[in-house]
Length: 269
Image (cartoon, rainbow, N blue to C red; front, side, top):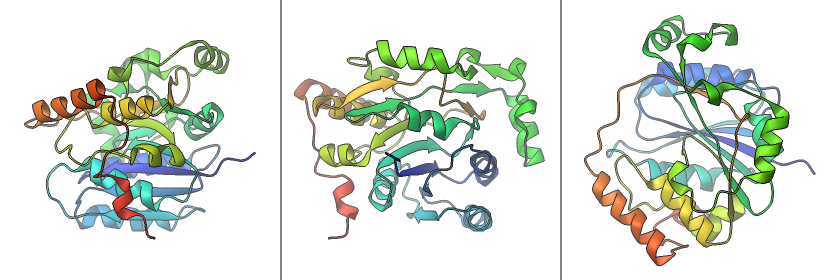
């Protein structure tokens, strides 16, 4: 059975990075059914990038935008979830370059009753600046010597399948990366998506993961496939991290599943 999919790309005021990200989506061996730009309040330059690429893709490109009210990633992702037409949702950030087999690898790993967290390799500052200045790239230019976490840049199909078969994700929510995840939309309804009480950087991804686990959805980690290359940038300020940590611990300790302030706010009845 063919899986319908949506690729959700979160972004905020970094149009040069989003351009590279969308260029890499154009090179996918299997395209998603649609692309959704989850935009947390970017300016007109990001709109121009989205409009430009919308004309280049053979699939729909939706731009879901909300006003800039600080770091509200949970909210914009919920809006994107609600707008998605695919049954399987691939979630990334707009500062990633995708391996050409990224979408294929995630769709191959999709199993009912599971959600997936992938990994990332890190592009150093010098190569990031070069790529951003050029505005284009070839995969040959992503030199291994410029990568951190090189082990996350190795695509080995057999090892990926074996790792998926034998590993278990229970109790490992601290290792989930929101920049590279995939969910069944029906499972997101069980927990009502992200908890919009989370504001500012941190822990919203771990929280949705633990609530999915509490709801009986199993976590799997995708290794040796679903490869992404993360552009260098300075660390995001974390002024509200302690509050987010407390919210996450609450879900963990109380075995929370459904949260009231979530994606159902944006579903048209």
